[in-house]
Length: 120
Length: 114
Figure 1 (cartoon, rainbow over the protein chains, first blue to last red):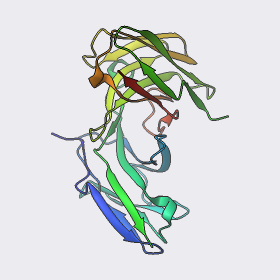
Figure 2: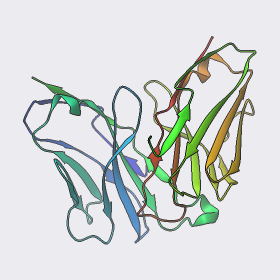
Figure 3: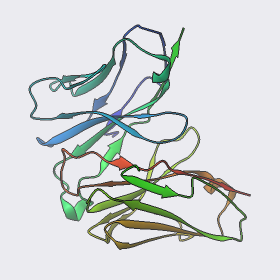
Figure 4: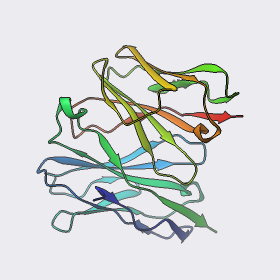
């Protein structure tokens, strides 16, 4: 089974509008971390936001917020007031607590990504 | 200077060449990773190094040979590659065993095999 599922291969949003990028995850661990990364066409992966499994508040970082619904195992990224520079590929990722160092040190598992295009 | 530096940014090589990709991190991390990203494919984890020891090799062909001489440096040695190996190769570093720690990525090397 996929550990991270991103069901939207592509999304369009008007400039200045908000957009939600979906992410669901699958884990039986109690301790895990959820991350979102942005990858512009230049290729670099840029960290955006983090949510810990024990965090009760939704994470926010500037225009980015993470809508964390633990019971539904979803961690959607919300981008408010979209800008043209937000056009990029967005990846959801998870790091589980059970692996430990011998299991690869809790690897970060990525989804397949959502290509976001912001239009005028 | 970014935390993770990859060189070269672009590389074109023939199938009989030997080349190396270099990754260096200045963040004090103890884990380093190589990823391959092909066009329209998910990120593929290739190798994991924790405390300089290789802890994972995801069935990567032997024409890719990693080397981690210390916690700050990671190399990917390439030889007799195939055209399908053309891709973006990303290096990352992190703190092993800490779920609250994300990865810091380099800018990647765009490899073209001709």
